Image (cartoon, rainbow, N blue to C red; front, top):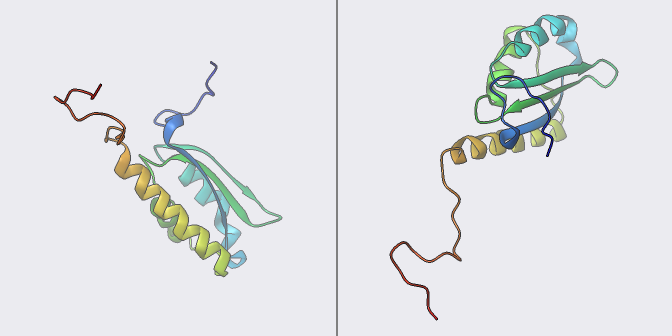
Length: 122
């Protein structure tokens, strides 16, 4: 099985892909912001589509979250779009990021396994 190569700090199991529409008013500083976002630990790739004003991200959600990326954008006076669909996706992305981060250290659990020390019924 051939796995894709990822940057240092990025695990294939926790890799998430995000697409955020940005507010077109402040996209003048986008290249500086992309440069700073690109240096974050846990980020796999980042790009910006000028035509659709969408920031495309792929990162390890156990090491990085959308809030950290939005902090960098805010520092460069760039805002996420204000339409309802972008806000809905943003909330969903944050929920999934938090779930990934919470479940990183936990062992998988199944109700079909016998508790430790119990004999299976025959």
